[in-house]
Image 1 (cartoon, rainbow, N blue to C red):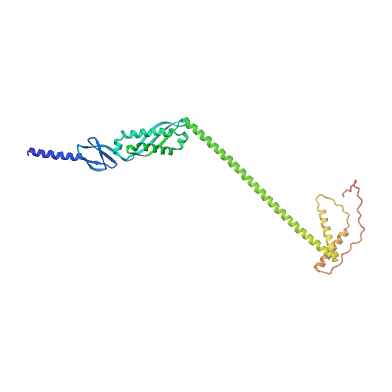
Image 2: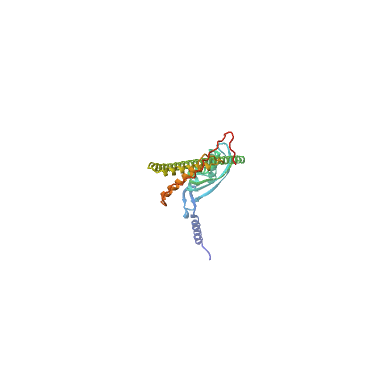
Length: 335
C-alpha cells in the first residue's frame, strides 16, 4: 500500500499530538512539589497527582522534597566562655513549607542550613561555661532551635528539631572533672557520716535523758509510797498506843504489861540479831521477862475466852544474879 502525501501528514500530526500530550502531562509523587517556570519565570507549584502544563512554553523548574529531612552536623571545635575547648556534633531536622521560596530564595539549601546550624552552635555554646554546657543540654537545644528556625524562615523552611549528639571535652579536662567529682562525693560522704554521728549522739543523749527522767519519777514514786507506808504505820502505831492508853486509863493493867513485854521482846531480838556483836552482857532479871510473858498469856486467854483468866505464875525465888564488876582496863574473857 502506497501512502500518499496526505496520509503522511496525518500520521505526522497524530505523532506530534501524542508527543505534545506526553510533554504536557506531569505526575507529581506524594511528598514532593514541582515548581513550574514559563520562559524561565516561576508561575505556580504543582501538587501531588496528575497535572497538565503547556508544552514547550512551561517546564518544571525544581523538584522539592517537602517531607521532614535530617541533616547531620559534623564535629567542630567550640571555645566555651571559660576558655575550655570542647568538640561537639549535632543533628538537625527540617521541612520545606514553601517549595517556591526554598527553590528560589537560597542556593544549595542543605549547605546553607548546615553552615547556619554550625555557626549558631559555636555562638550558643561559646556563651556558656563548661559546667553549664555539660549539664544544660536541653537548654542548648532549645536556643539552637529558636535561633536557626528564625534564620531559615525567609527560605520557606521550618526547622523542627536541633539536637546536640555529643560533647567531648579534652582528656586532661575530663580527668580533672573526675577528680573533682570524686572529691565532692568524698566530701558529701564525710558530711553524711558526721551528720549520722551527730544524730546518733543526740539520740543517745535523748535516751539517757528519758532514762534519767523515768528513774527520777520512779524514785519519786517509790519515796511517795514509802512515805505513805510510814504514814500508815505511824497511824497504826498511834492508834495502838491510843488504845493501850485508853485501856490503862480504864484501869486495865494487863494492857500495859502486854505493851511493855512486846517492846522488851523486840529490843531483845534486835540486840540478839546484831551482826557486830558476838558476846552480849546485859544486867537483867530473867524472872521479869518470864513474868511479862505470863502476863501476855493471861491477856490472850481473857481475849479469846477459852478459860477464865488466871494469875500469872510467880517466878521461883532465886537469888538475884548480880553482874560482876567489870574492870574497863581488864575486860572479861569469853569461855
